[in-house]
Image (cartoon, rainbow, N blue to C red; front, side):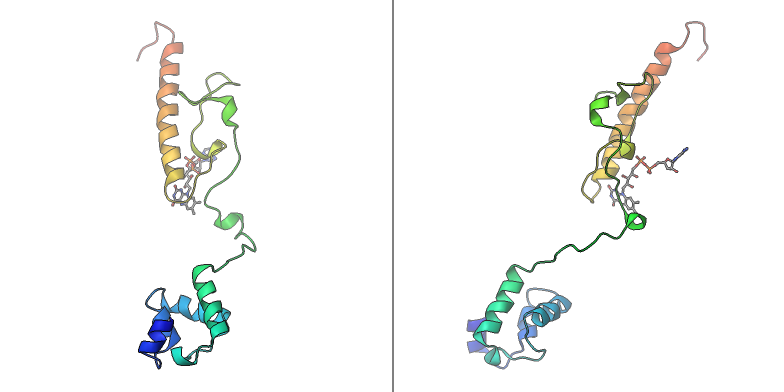
Length: 143
Ligand SMILES: Cc1cc2nc3c(=O)[nH]c(=O)nc-3n(C[C@H](O)[C@H](O)[C@H](O)COP(=O)(O)OP(=O)(O)OC[C@H]3O[C@@H](n4cnc5c(N)ncnc54)[C@H](O)[C@@H]3O)c2cc1C
C-alpha cells in the first residue's frame, strides 16, 4: 500500500483494494475501517491504513443467528449410528428395518456430502433389505 502510494499518490484507496477483493467488499472494508469513499492513497493516514490492512486480512464476521428451519439444508440428529450395522444399514434394534440418509444422525458440510451420504447409504440399505427379503422368503414362494 505504501509503495503504491509512492508510485500513484492520487490513486483511490478503493481502486487499489478492488485489485484484491470485489469492489462491494472493498467498500465495506473501507467503511468498517473508517476510511471515507474517495480517499486517495496519499491522504490515507497511518492508523487508517493499519485498520484497513487488519480488516483486509482478519475481518471478523460474528454469527448472530441462524435463518431458521425454513431455510435449513441439513438436519442434525436422528437414529444413533451405534444402533445401525454399517455394512448393511440394518437396525440393531428392530429386525428387518434399514436406514438411509437424513434419518440417521449424520450431517455433512454443504457441498454434496449430504447427497452422497443419502445415495451411498441408500444403495447399501436397499441392497441389504432386498437380500433380507429374499432370505426370509418361504422356499415355495414364487419370484
Ligand atoms: C434447500 C435444501 C438444499 C440442500 N442442498 C444440498 C446440497 O447442495 N448438497 C447436499 O449434499 N445436500 C443438500 N441438502 C440436503 C439433502 O437434500 C439431504 O441430505 C438429502 O436429500 C437427504 O436425503 P434423504 O433421502 O435421506 O431424505 P429426503 O430427500 O428428505 O427424502 C425423504 C422422503 O421421504 C418422504 N416422506 C417423509 N415422510 C414420509 C411418510 N410418512 N411416508 C412416505 N414418505 C415420506 C418425503 O416426502 C421425501 O420425499 C439440501 C437440503 C435442502 C432442504
